[in-house]
Amino acid sequence: MVSVQINDNESIDKMLKRFKKKYERAGVLKEFRKKAYFVKPSVDGRLKRSRSRRRAQRANEERNS
Image (cartoon, rainbow, N blue to C red):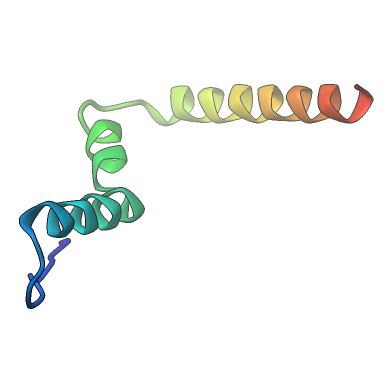
């Protein structure tokens, strides 16, 4: 759980900005979206392999360019 305490003489905007950074770094939203629906293990593995291939292709393209 992400929590933020307001510091002395700190505006609400700054506190919210700190909260948003912690929230993103903790990966709360990413995890929520991932768990929004069930993905079968076979489909999950297939997606991971395709993402890995895509990353490798992009890396090769950048090296060759």
